Image (cartoon, rainbow, N blue to C red; front, side, top):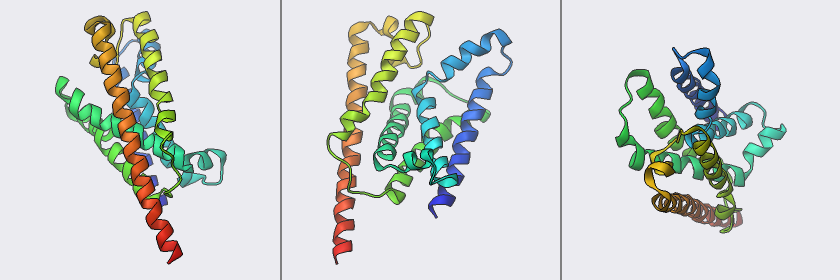
Length: 212
């Protein structure tokens, strides 16, 4: 069951990423492709969906390989669940109103921001062993959002391009940008703590059933 489920959504994830990249670079001059590619991988949505696709693919096709074992780790899967859940929530509440994708872009946008978050969190709920997460883990998982924030600042000031309106420091000003950074990091942390709470509840249930 898990292999079939992961195979289906791994294919959906990789397809959505490929289509999103293709739509981004279509009809663009060759000279613009390197910069557009860098921008593509400077979206947290894209980076997280790549992690999701990898975490679905590796256990399905090579569970005993090093990538397969890495992707099967309870901590890795929970951290990715945290990231992709925040991607979906952030898009729905902060970004969906600022643009109106049409046609194929609407389909791809839905896959990356709605389908894949739901699919991976469901995968984590159904197929990942529970009871091994610690309350400190969500703080450790903030490393990726913090690194992404640092990269966005460096890349944004160097290129003048910012991936999200709430990270656009020149437009918002330092104080408002700092406020949104705190809001986002708090959202990541809160989501991670909810996942740990769910993990611990499910873990206690599994232990009781095993002892019965």
